[in-house]
Amino acid sequence: MTLHILKPSMNPLALRILESTPAEDAPVVVILSSKGELPHLRGVKVYRMTESSSPDNSESISYSRLLDMIFTADKVVAW
Image (cartoon, rainbow, N blue to C red; front, side, top):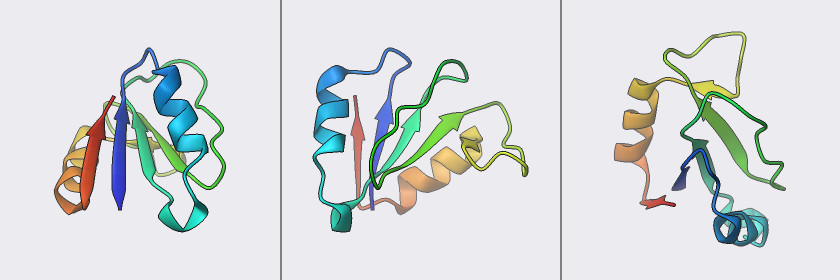
């Protein structure tokens, strides 16, 4: 898995690259913001950073879950 971490002010180049990624190489994206719209990227799982993840919100992850994802990812890209 490739983990992409995006700042709250999402980089347009990062979004274009993620949109063009083949489905079999689907990355996981974490947005470091609890506000604003999540980008709609075809075949990409997008999460929003929150203080603590809520079981009823599958789009949010906590800091501890992000840390787990960083250590299990094959590659981490920070934008």
